[in-house]
Length: 154
Image 1 (cartoon, one colour):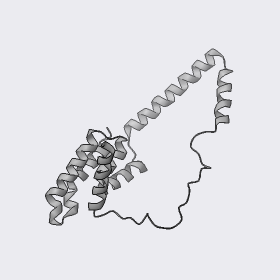
Image 2 (cartoon, rainbow, N blue to C red):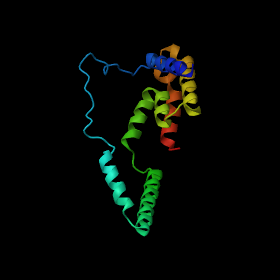
Image 3 (tube, one colour):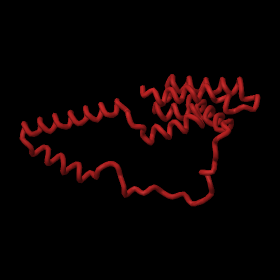
Image 4 (cartoon, rainbow, N blue to C red):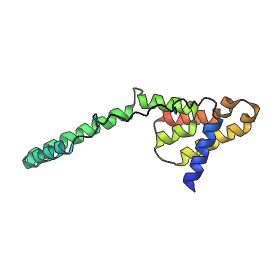
């Protein structure tokens, strides 16, 4: 029931959103993605690295684990600072302007309270201002909330 309702809301927003273009859904050939550039290492590489790690002495294993923990800690600290705008954030902002609830869902990665607040604000805006023919003004509360969620970093 929850998925049907979510699908209904998504289709409703797609129908009433003035800036959405369905040009991507053409009858042309669909190209399959190139799988040669896999982001995950091959299993043979992983097995080889595990054999090498297991052949190390106990002291060397501890030092390597410390180095990895330090590298992970530095990565998390850099990610927390968030001084540079990533491409992902830029795309989420663009989607947030076009379809606010979808942007909140993609940012959060799950359907939670923030998503439902965005849906309610967008629908409320459409109900208040949408019938007057001002669609952008109707989605403005949802846009503002979506941008707040995306750019707040929490």
